Amino acid sequence: MSLVEISGADALVPLPPPPPPMPRRSPPPPPPRFDAFDHKGARMVCGFRCPVTKRSSLKPLHWVKITRALQGSLWDELQIQYGESQTAIELDVPEIETLFSVGAKPRPKPKPEKVPLIDLKRANNTIVNLKILKMPLPDMMAAVMAMDESVLDVDQIENLIQLCPTKEEMELLKNYTGDKATLGKSEQCLLELMKVPRFEAKLRVLSFKIPFGTKITKFRKMLNVVNSACEEVRSSQMLKEIMKIILFLGNTLNQGTARGSAVGFRLDSLLILSETRADNNKMTLMHYLCKVLASKAADLLDFHKDLQSLESTLEINLKSLAEEIHAITKGLEKLKQELTASETDGPVSQVFRKLLKDFISSAETQVATVSTLYSSARINADALAHYFGEDPNHYPFEKVSATLLSFIRLFKKAHQENVKQEDLEKKKAATEDVFGGPDHNIDSDTSLDDSEAKSPSRIRPPPSIPRPPSRPRYACCRIPAVNPPPRLVCGPYPLPRLVRVGSPSPPPPSMSGGAPPPPPPPPMLVASRTAPPPHLSHVRSIPFQTRLVMGTSPLPLLVREGAPPPTLPSMSGGAPPPPPPLPMLRYQ
Image (cartoon, rainbow, N blue to C red; front, side, top):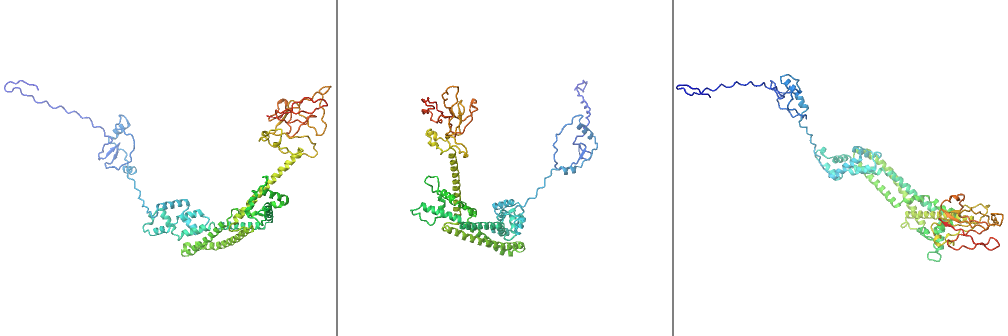
């Protein structure tokens, strides 16, 4: 502070403080933001009045929020516009809260807990069987009570039988005093089945009825076949004649031994005819029997035609058939018991009881007929075993029929082999007639060594067709064949001519006016598997059975390669000319 000099007593008195500065003018308040309130105290958001009350949680709108409006933007204009207390449209906020609230979802009512009464494994099996049936349980129960075979088959009935409750399960379900609706699905199924008294027994009645007609028809057919087969065998005269011939053959072979002078033989002995071979091992006693019958009694070869029903007995077993008929008889007894028990069931089993009574009456008649037919077949089967001298207890009908069928099969096979062998012999005889003599055996051919004679490639030539009687004979020989037959190519010379046996040979052609030249050397025969060369394309192939006659010269010989050539006879009265080279047969 400044000091002022004052004379006298007032010396150095301080000055008063300066006055305070003038207050600055405050800026105008900013325009109302989005969280402004109107004059009634309600919160304003973009000009829309929102209640101050606590809102319920709403579903959020997942946008990207702008926290500061840029000057001149839409959001800045909205702030300026609605900040000046302008009125905006009002929205129904409670409606928005109702529509977009995130209130807790209503919890589903808790399901009542199922009360298990039966074993878990048994319950699961029950559910599986219900799915397999693929039919509502009440519909199946109605079909059973009506004994309707068109709705259910045997397999479905067996599944239903597995669903039926046991005595323990029925007692457990009857003693349950709680709410039946709380029981599981398997327990509900068992309760439904318990509504029909003895439902399992009624299922077994239907299971017996469905295949009954088919079984009775099958039994009748099989028993009729047995009776027919027994009658055919015992009345066959041709079979009797064959057995008589076999007996004679056996006594002939066993003459002078303990097996000889037999009055008969066991039925199994028919099968060893094919095992008894002749001395040459080319024929059995069965072949000989067929051969004798073919030559002296050809009508007996078809004896099997008298035994047409025997083939159908191959799959029939009388013992098993008797067991099945006995099972049907016992099944009828159970049906009668169910008929008696169903009289106390009341109206629920009235239709079932009537249908069951009619079925039992018809079934008893059919079973009695089949039983009578079986008794007749049993008697005929035993008589058939006695017919062949066998004991029915040790040699039943099944064994008798199997033995006879095996004998027929072996007999047919031997006869077919005899016919085949006879045809081969006829063809062989025809071949010998064509070539003017017996056919040579390859193994006995002295012009070849043993290794060549026994070679697999050396096969016998196929038989030829017999020639007509008027055809002239030619000198022929058999040339060993190869497979395929060789083609004969005659070097540079033409093929030699074929001349009739016994006719004079033509003179060799003269090449000039003078004496005939010496004969050319015989052509070389080459056995080739390929086609002839181009310069010999005019040469044709000739059959390998043909023997070549070379004018007046002897027949060409087949000699072993490397062997000395034989001396040829003279073609004139003078000294014999030097021997020409012999034709050599070479295999290429």
